[in-house]
Image 1: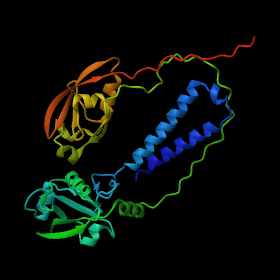
Image 2: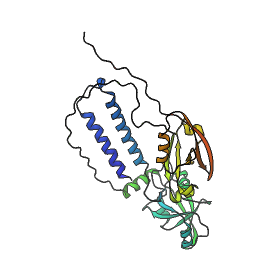
Image 3: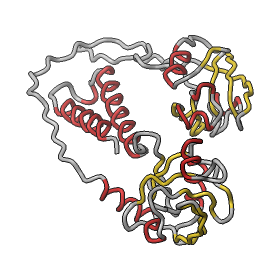
Image 4: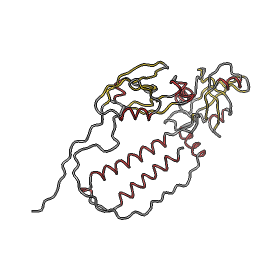
Length: 319
């Protein structure tokens, strides 16, 4: 679990509480910039906690035990992709499957007899090409169901039957592997803040507003990028497409890999954010997309964020 993210979220939440407790004008007279700042702090804290909940182990390991959905099967292993060198070392007949780098104690995998350095090559007779496919197939099997695994061990194939566990078992096992750490956040003493001067707000955008494509994505690199066929193993994997967004209207789908923005190379999410930040008015852009290892081009209409409508401020008048 990413504790750096948790510390950041905790710090932002504590800062928001401190600011809320400071004396100042009544809620009805609260300046717009104060309300905007409080909303921004709350949103940052929520996003940080969401990233923590969805975080996976570091390195190129893919944890099949990490946060399975409700009712999804849990096996209790960590695994790596099979490389040509590893296939040769283990004398695999074909270069496919997943190498088990760790088996969680008391997990369904451990109870079925799976061991570290086993290579799982098939599930219920279906060949395994890589870690992402293996992880998806495990999660698609309901908890409590049995599966037949073909395992390559010590130069020969053997069959093992495993009964998959539940999400609750996965969370308990994860908690045992990640013991809680003490977390203390100290706020330095703050001087009394002066009253904020009144000002009229005419709807200008707050800093940070930028056009959006409407996707949730992650950077690809190394072997995972090569698995999707990304050039140099780099690109942006689309995890989710927001309903009604420019990405959905352009036909972008989860599982696509973005590699170009108006013919310019996209390697990371940072590259995409930089390109979107330069859009000042409605603009049609061409996006290079990898789908099933084949490149296609889609056209998306990017619109800048709408500025809020002007608000009228009310000032009491004594007559």
